[in-house]
Length: 252
Ligand code: NDP
Ligand code: 8X3
Image: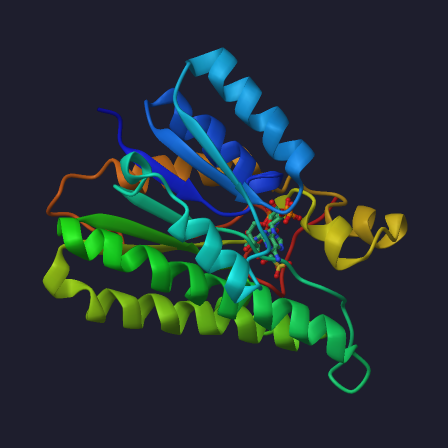
């Protein structure tokens, strides 16, 4: 029987690349996100390429009713989740704290922090029952450095780090591993979402250096989940070679 991974936010970027990569190493996949058309395409392509089992759950991670419905509706054979990858997340806006939109703050906190918690809350009992599992939370360099115009996104990723640490402690007795990955700049749809389609702002972010790509993170996830049973990777901080931290990027 194949292992099962549930990945949130598989309609683009890191989540999509991770789904494709894990399919190649034999995982059956629960793919999630709000854009059903993209889930359909991903499911078809994974089945065509790897012939693994794929279950798609289309829901908004901010909505408790939808999260409950999605997880409660899992057929029994899909409840043995080995790996949960809490990846769905976003930055909304790039503004000083006195000018940012309340709505953007709510979107980030509701998705990056509360959504991650809602879903984990429902999956952890399934892992506890089996006395095994692995949770990987996608954090960020923004969970380590706080930069101008990013206070609430950074706060949301600092919160992810605290939640990761707390989960690791609470789940110690149940043989459930908890890891996180903290990437620097990864070229995905992240900046399109953050800058709301402002092409100039988006281009500036990745100008003059080679950022990470989604496969780099998928590869890191593969490394983390293929360690022996007695080894847990607590956190991996992964940066583009030309980016030292949130403040220093060497551009051409
Ligand atoms: P993308 O925008 O490419 O992907 C984000 C994914 O999250 C999409 O699949 C989106 O699906 C999903 N998502 C967003 N909001 C919701 C929601 N309310 N409910 C369900 N799913 C949602 O960005 P990335 O792949 O770059 O981002 C993935 C993670 O990596 C995020 O947590 C981000 O903070 C983190 N990260 C990104 C970095 C970067 O530079 N790109 C660096 C460090 C961390 P849909 O819209 O279909 O719902
Ligand atoms: C995304 C990376 O540097 O834009 O988490 O915050 S950054």
